[in-house]
Image (cartoon, helix red, strand yellow):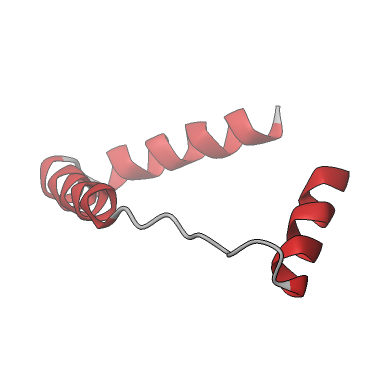
Length: 59
């Protein structure tokens, strides 16, 4: 956490330049996967997938 604060301070003072990761191919791939999942699963199946994911996050 401290190293992140130091990094932000260095960006703010101009000591280093901020770099952003641009990965549009990954985003496009994710969007295509989401569309394919929606087309190939029923609403009940998607609901069950979401329920399992939520439970996994809270366990």
